[in-house]
Amino acid sequence: MPKRPSQAAMLRQIQKMQDDMSAAQQALEHETVEVSVGGGLVTVVMTGHQRVQSVDIDHSQIDLEDEEWPEDLQDLLVAAVNQAVEQSQLLAAQKMESITGGLGGLPGMGGLLG
Image (cartoon, rainbow, N blue to C red; front, side, top):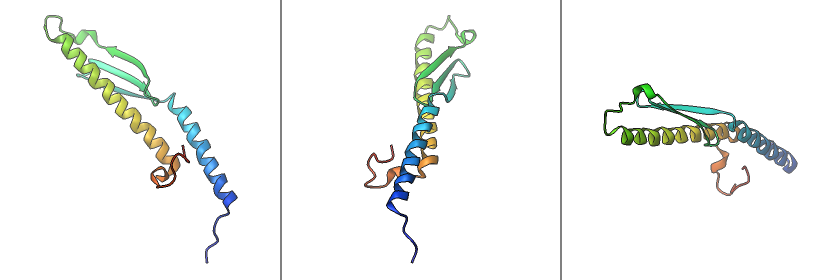
């Protein structure tokens, strides 16, 4: 019959996982994703904590004679920010998955791992 891990060993393992998750959360503050839309007209850089670090607009691509350019620019800004949020969330999820190995979705674990 296989030997069951002791409760103390399991608690140490859970504490290590929590420490690793905390370190990963801190690291996400400094990791970034970069999204460009509109052929590079708008570029957004966002941290793993979903904080916008920069928005760059390539002025050379703006056509001031086009009456719709302000609306087009607004649409591109929304698209770029939304894509950056999605990529940032994916980055965070991948980091957490590498630590928990998928344990976060187990029933009854409610908040124990994070």
